[in-house]
Image (cartoon, rainbow over all chains, first blue to last red; front, side):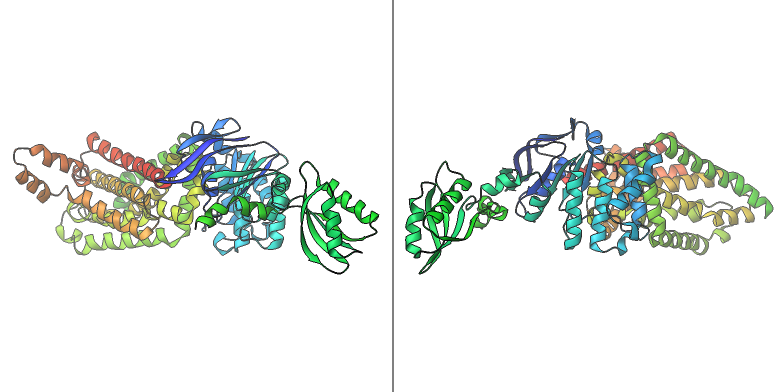
Length: 318
Length: 277
């Protein structure tokens, strides 16, 4: 649905986006991650046809955003950063305006507006002037205009920014639901959101893709992903340590606590072995040696660890 | 009095109505729907905010006041408005047109709504034309509401209404040219005040280069090249206004105004694109 090929953007000497390529299919929700200034918004603005690109191309359902601008734009729903709105309009009037510009047929405009208002929970402020709305309602109004024409493609720049935790949850659920039959790209700083709503995530840094995969794949890249944490009791700590080191599934271990009759350690995985094999080996050893297993779990790896690993360059230099 | 009202209705109200109807018909049947949508939003926005009313009322008070008290409409004993009214009218538009148009694109950029609008399926020129037409309606309504002065002159004497109508047409075209300058300037700034001041400066400039002293001094500077002077004055809005407002409807002048406006609106599109990249 969305095809981005070799997309670059230069502002003078500064390279904001550097040769990005990726595709998003129908039914995919792509989380767009990256530190501030990594080029997320710039990329989204080029995909929506707002910013002219320096190099590369973007096509939306086969329509090039430069060559066939209006067709491409009519397939996109876009929520810009900070949710800009015409303050002198009412919510209802603004959504009607958006529906007309987004080419909803005249006879279906009222239905489309009703539906968007229901989806974004705006009924209570429907006839209120936009400049009197709170930030959460403003954001939802802008979200409503992006889905009013039921587009195939949604580009959402920080859709949950400024919402309270309940609204964030609702927005995430909404994105997930809509993602079933649309292609969605959304950017965020909040990593839990990626796990909650995305089928895939891209991390970009300094305009380049530094990681790309499903949230689970990304998490497995974390430094401690797959490591088994064990807390065993029944022998002196040093004794248990020796037993653990003997296991062929273990490559080494890091003891976090050790005492008279217990140990708590993080056991690294030997090459070619899975975490499950390692943990069952530890369990078997514990049973053989008559140890009590107080804790035995596989470390999942955390997205923010991955995020920090791959986007260090900026802070390291700074 | 009855006679004056009939004359004004026939000579002014009727043409105004015809122009308004043609405008509405063009809007309804000729222009793309996106232009109409933007136009409707902008007109509503103008008349929902105090801006349009303040501009209209101030303009009417000042323009009518000046011609009655300073222009001496009543003392001249002539039943026309050329010297007393149309001499001054464009000067007001140097301030009024930028005041009406300063928000056109600067506000849109400041609020970020430009990003919203230009990512919808609308070509930039459609948005530019829609917004420009909406602001034109405000200027047009100012001239329509100037009817009391026409009524007064018709009541007092038997003026040549054709010439007067030409004066209004010329004034409208000048106002629209100034508005297009403002549209162009507002594409380059996020601040309404900056847009207002620079537009006033530019309007004043294109007005003043047509004055006699300017062409005289150009002639003195380049005595061997008289075409420079006529070229510069040919570029001025003033020269074409004078021709038109004398009641001589020349297609050359009409074409000048239309190309001037088109050029500025095209410049607006270029400005908006430059700002984005």
